[in-house]
Image 1: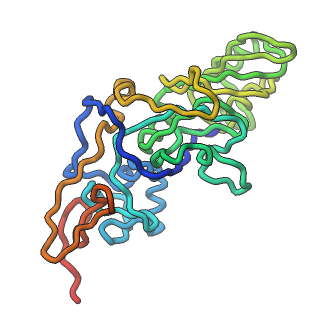
Image 2 (image 1 turned 135 degrees about the vertical axis):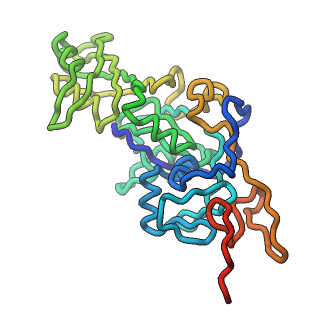
Image 3 (image 1 turned 180 degrees about the vertical axis):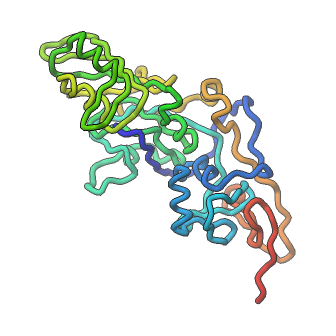
Length: 312
């Protein structure tokens, strides 16, 4: 289990209904650094955005960016790898019950099925909050806000991850105490893990495991270090979000009001507004068919500052 988000995209649909009024609408005049803007839009993480910029794959109003320090607004036309980026929508989140046997990735070099192969095509572009291993089941959070996903993955947030683990071996008070103190496996240090024995069935034990990090295969490696071999692992809770009775392979959206109540100012409650533009004489308005305008006109720098047109 690695806390690294993955990004996938279906067709774009509108912002969440029943918008909360807990936070003010983000205005285009305020401006936002391009990397953060792309993260909020669910395109990639900030770090990945900086890499894309250095590779020359990000353009604003027809100009190729060479610095992540540029501020942009919903009025600018932004392209990543030649595709127009729509302004960030209101923050939305889904709880997905991941079945075993699916990769938490957009694509797999070995051709194995991924979670995005099984998600509804009606979903907007979403990123995962962390990952679950191929054989791990249970709660996987999806959101259209990449910046929120990044924050929720950080150990500094203190969000607890709860698991039910079925493991072969002998559970002793000493082993559980060792996990609580933290263990080192193959040179990797794992912080305190709270593990309690729920029941024993034959040679298997069911444990409730709580951790506050998300290192690669952390539960399996930590339990193996005290003589317990995990043969089934189910995540049942991530921070305040619970799997509850959600059936395997299905997902449900967290209601907008509940999301705003839980996360408060961490989320966008409205889509970033786009200021109306007055096209210059003879200039065709920029925009996408059948929807709101995707960006500003040519001849306008990021943030709405005008530039001189090139001489012909």
